Image (cartoon, rainbow, N blue to C red; front, side, top):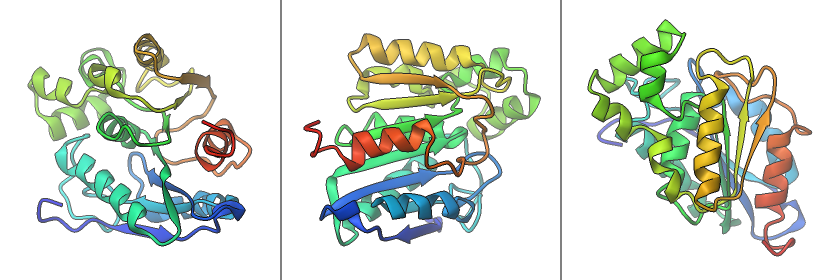
Length: 239
């Protein structure tokens, strides 16, 4: 992407007894990378998903520098979605996207451009970078935004899922920790309200410990249940 190598891990699923089967792109959070998400990916494969894991620029095996939800980052996620759609046995009408931390921020921006997605899970995302830079309690995240997106509020708004809430047409699950001081849950609540006001099917789950770094390895959690119901079983349930 833009002349940079992007690391991806591809794992073919079983289809859950339905062929072709569903697919999912997983996007990591801060200080992580694609290979660290393999355990939860394997659980999802066992449910029937084919999975593509992508390392964002500057993480894992992807060439840097890092950037906060910028064009190379969103381009890497879009390339992962395209790779998944080309994989053998994947039903392109049943593709989902799951991002965590600033991977959730970038995933939300991509979802606004991909109305065909069957469902999106966003865990511990920053949905209003300008408010985070202005009011956030985490100096590290404020520094990351300034370093990767510059100091111009216009650039922060260009990376704001809240500004593009009207463009999301697919079901969305937001998972956020009430105690998150980096991106206060008020951001998730404001994003949920904006999505709902535009007719998006959206649910916000308050989940203690929903982290910014990795996707929890929990096949019984709300995120996996959402993906099962909204993506895996999409046609079976007549959605």
